[in-house]
Image 1 (tube, rainbow, N blue to C red):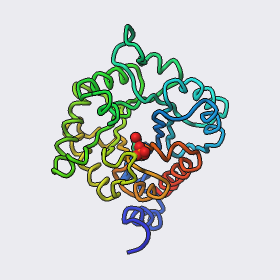
Image 2: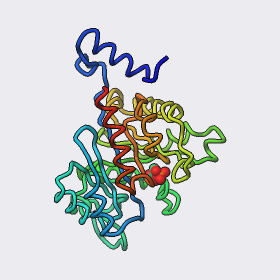
Image 3: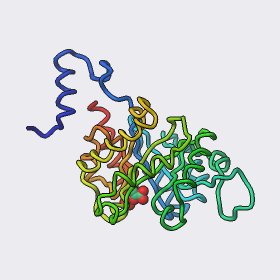
Length: 280
Ligand code: PEP
């Protein structure tokens, strides 16, 4: 019909006709939009300093950067120095409070170095570190108890997608990760494993359809609170496809790997979601 989506067409129409935004009419969701960087095992100290110097951020969307563990504290200092509204997150956490767990990081250690977020259950940890839903559930509980917002990752493999198991896999992962959790202080990231780092991003339509399914499962679990949970898309998201995701009603931001390593591409993605917020 025209270049803008039906959703933004209706929003603009309401604004034009009765002089109120959909937000004022409380028809709009109040979910927070996030653009989150997962640097994985990349960057050194100098590159980290340069990134935080260059990156632009704003108060329209929540920007969170998740560097490797040894860069968390310097990243915290760089964020403070530059006074940019950027949140900090770990990429993983251990379920125990402390003890003989060589190479691990506890939740209090993350808090101590300025983290408010932590990625939990990333497919690379499921694949390479053998993390299962039960372990992920323990970590999610630990994070929520400590006041750290978990960014819980779920997603199907290519084999599971091809054998039409996506919905079953996602619902098992969701029920597993959120077992015995009453709080709604978490973020979900739908990250199809076949899309991560491959350049084969899910189409915005497929991602929207899957996010809507995830929200329907969440509604069964936590009722109306499901409407307030931000569900991010992750898997080869970049500055070229971000606008398509941002136009979708159930996609509340992106978790970005490769394209988050360069300030210019990450900034471009932040800009896309900022415009999306301003159009609401
Ligand atoms: C990720 O690993 O969380 C991710 C989304 O990676 P990429 O953007 O590189 O696919």
